[in-house]
Length: 170
Ligand SMILES: [Zn+2]
Image 1 (cartoon, rainbow, N blue to C red):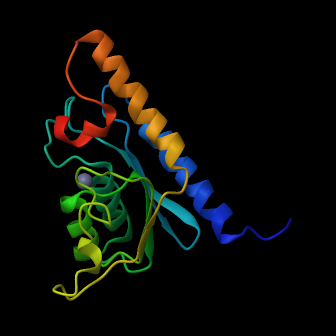
Image 2 (cartoon, protein in one colour; image 1 turned 30 degrees about the vertical axis):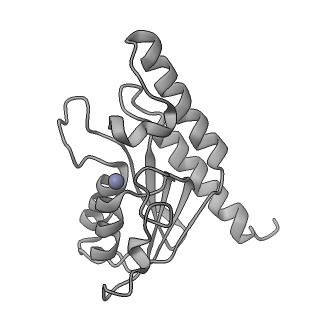
């Protein structure tokens, strides 16, 4: 078998994150996985709306917490996060606190993305730790999932807004 290219590897992991994002159709479809040494050690989807009642229940937070518990350390230095939507300020900050090795995300979030869209928190020289990030891989699949989620919501209960306003509604 030929060696996977870097790009193929990222696509494979983002596909897993996309699968995770669709696991609970009551939640905004965002999914995240944590990969360490080629192994998926944590996976999560948003858990905010349903039984969780958790304002901070973003997929990234849950996946990083799972990974740290599993590894028995709060440092995720050799871990990479794959997430279907660009991390918000909370999650980008959490990535820095966890000393994550890197983060790859699918769709950009023009409303509150903090890995380049609204702001590039993880590269701000004011902070001591930085996390390399890259986005835009498989963004169409991730955007489609978000768009169909909000289209369905609109059909069920009419509300203003477009999928681009995802974060305002969150
Ligand atoms: Zn977040």
